[in-house]
Length: 392
Image 1 (cartoon, rainbow, N blue to C red):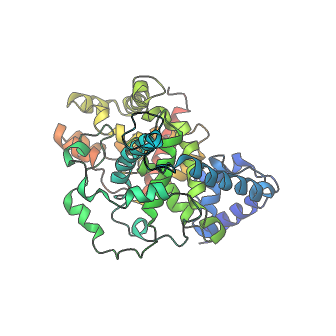
Image 2: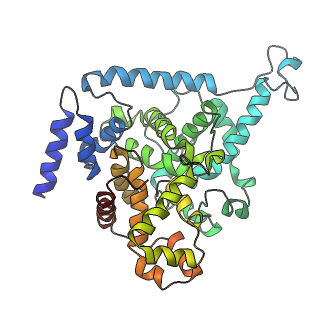
Image 3: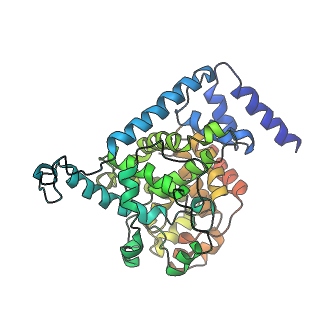
């Protein structure tokens, strides 16, 4: 308890500085951010570069960014119209012109269907994302999006086989899991669930970042960020969780976007390079284990593709993911530490892996057993210290 109070005092003092030492803040965050007083949300925004290191500039910077978000929404969302004359063929649903608002509207709906399929299943074991937001979203011009979503996915769900064979290996949602939503009370007319806010952010991201657009699994990355921001104790910060999440997610995707770019899979910057580094780490630290995994045919793409790309967001419960992300965001060589965490995950279950054949290894690694987060991160830090950041 005394140590916890001392760490909380350190964070308070540092965040109260006229100019925050972001390097020192990162060192504190690496050991975990406090849950109190919205400190974690503030720290993540600082570490991701959304907030300037000078608290005196926060109010102005946030006001500008949040206003820009509202303007961006009004410009990006497309609502088709028939013009003053209903017979006007310039903006007609059958108009083949790719620049027509109707054509763009139909394309938007295709994006929405894909995003909706994922976001409405976000953290099904938690009620948070299914609950109504405390703030009306009428301030955003989202009529085109919300109108399109009134006819939900119920009649157009993707086949389970299509989900199961996705590139990222996202865990498939069975019909049994889907029923977990049933106990939640229906929202009142005009209310909006948190998952719908996440959906809108992803839609806007897809529209403004066409090089990557939307890739299945992005919902798993944006979910923890939005959850942390939307839980801020200060209502003024909580009210703008949507805009703040959009900009922090955009920054994050700028850093890890190569992992979602298929043409970069085989490059050092892509997922292939990251998985290769993970196996180099295992080979260096535990040659017998590496030889066993290789011998039974355990290719890293079977498990580490999802681990790395989704930053372990599907391998642990949300509170554990959030704690792990404290360290990942604080990493000076951002997400280099992620490889060491993944390496620690493998090494911590080496005994079970060594006595397992291909099927058993696959089951262990694709459905990682419960693990103490503190022990996991401590093991990862030990690996990092031993390798001195020169492994690759």
